[in-house]
Length: 239
Image (cartoon, rainbow, N blue to C red; front, side, top):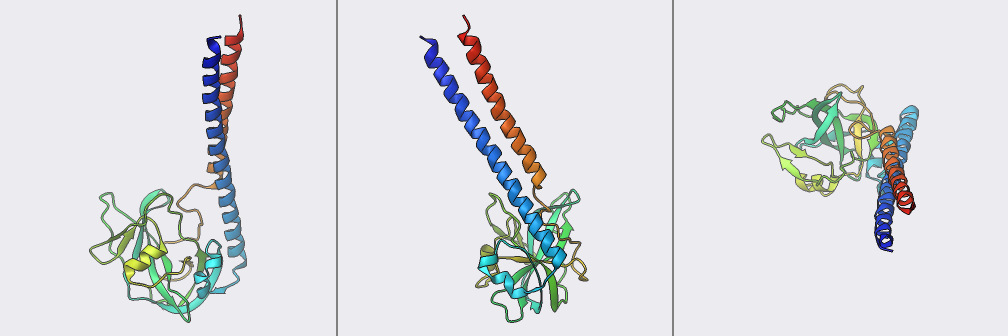
């Protein structure tokens, strides 16, 4: 009878591990589906390119959607916003943003001007003035996912703001604005000026196939724990 409590404890631990690994696998599958849906929606938007006004960036009901937007306005006389830890072709760097004031817009919006490299000593490069754009077009998108990073704002010597997460609320407060639109505009790469840029939606995060690979690993671990528990139970039950 002494083996029964031990066996019960072992199976309890095994079932807890199986439940945990299965939950992590399901979460990875769900993240992969979400990102694939995001890619599909962005591809459809870029294919159609039906322009919406820039003011659509301020619509809270569409804060998670992609849209092609065009319109006029001007850049605000405000410091640049630099999003840190952004890779391009395997190189570390920053993405530069400026505040744009749309004509008859409900709120200013952040416009991505492109990517620039950061040297190994982490010296922040000099930022060019805002382009002389009075007409804009590009992809309206949710801000890049921040994960668990806190939306801290670090002022630099040249006045620009270095951030680890593109939080419109925190950035608006740091710039002395009442609000910023919840979506950002990724400027059309065909527009002259700015920095090298593209319209890749998942440029700095895991693609859907990587999430699928991680899900397979978690489900594999759950199956391995179950198989191990069954083998040990069978061996102990033998005379």
